[in-house]
Image (cartoon, rainbow, N blue to C red):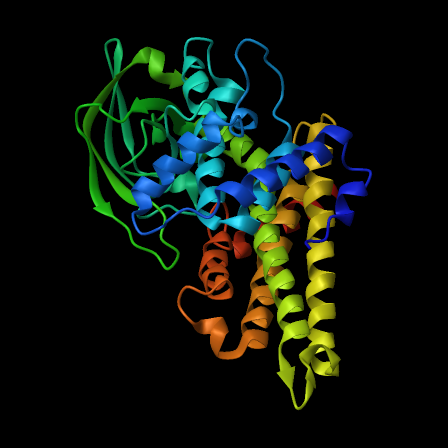
Length: 382
């Protein structure tokens, strides 16, 4: 039985506790799905999650606008990740892909949100480029104003939902100023002329990823999100909201690894007694439990702080993402060790967790970048 004691922490309200119980029951009935056709599985997951209302928190309701509930996003990602990494991916990308529209979109642009929240359209966040991953301000995507249109030329890579998305939020250089101050954000529908999938990218935990090419892609001026030159601020604001949810997904993976390890230790016998009686095994379990609880505290502190009205939670979210993803890697590695040969057998839950966790230490700000962010926040406040 997964540990649910954290739900009694003062970070949460009754509605969060009810959500956790209801979603866990839904997951037990609907997950995991067959991953052999990753594109098809993601489409199925988005449709199911939307049909049953679980995508509602990923974006604001244009009819009843209000801030995103980051605690709900985190609880949902943690719960989905504990059951199925691809389900977490499908949920998370709906939020990240539309985050700019939720935070900065016009009412007309936010019409997309009814579809993404219902699982009727898939969204994507197109920020990274071949030469500018963590260094966002160094992006090269060219955007030129041409009458009533903007024309986009260049490439984006490592784009989640690349090739299956219905809309992309794309960041490019409009040139109002050097560096970060010359970037703008645009809505680009998947069927825009000149937008193509240059390459599908395969990774150790299969997800739909692609390198996209933009060959003079023309969009109307109304596709501009916010104002010209504020795209970097838009991107960082979106990541500020969703970065702690990456930590929550890692926490879900770590909780599952801990649960599987406790079960293994109780059932497996070594030297005539259960593994659980070995002090070395007990030490591993204790370390895993400590890391899980510490990660949860950092994650839900960041989420609660944002929900309480903080304009930015850059420091808190960076700490949560860094600690949770790095420690989840350690927890899962211990789980592999405790499972022995089964831990590296293809198809075993612990083996799949080992593949799933690694990417979380890279995307939405690699661990080393988070350390730079945290240090700057600490020294800037001194």
